[in-house]
Image (cartoon, rainbow, N blue to C red; front, side, top):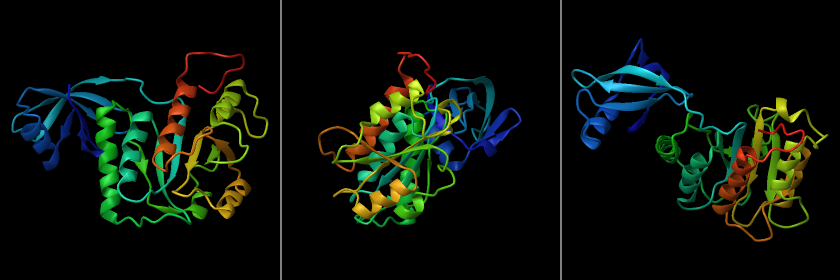
Length: 259
């Protein structure tokens, strides 16, 4: 069945009131008619098998479903915005990979200064990607924020936080995540009780020395994504792929509490 993201406020008793845009999509684009069914996703974990009614301005909820598609830990991506339309690709693929929250970063080397319309477009792309990839929730995209301010966001303050670097002798991100699974990280609280993971990826040209020092002072751990230099668009996707693989792996180890 086709999927459609709704807001929780659209639910009224056992029905869903459709917006004009949703009516157009269901009726004009998908060619659904009275009695046809689709899945309404409220973006907060609720899935509802719904049936178009009467004048096609609303739908009746005929069943609720619970499908587990989310990663076991909340994952926040803090990505420096690349020039052009690259951040659109990041939003789309990060959503497919299971990210919970996306923070667009304005670093010292960031050239992009997005308009409010650009932010709306990113959110629309994320919503469409969540529908396509059968996500339970729609990732939240925050307003663009300066790098220094992003280090102290209340939403991520207690999480395991990593900043990806291109050169140096930083440990590989995968090894750090496997250490969490083994419970070997003694520098922070019990991973089983931890609220999530934060991954920060840099701009074209990489982080400045000052930015890396600020991140380290704020509690971020520098990590590597491998021996090769990755583009600002590629690094977020590689890092999230590693997080998803580590958290969803069926390989269990002694003391495993990451997943």
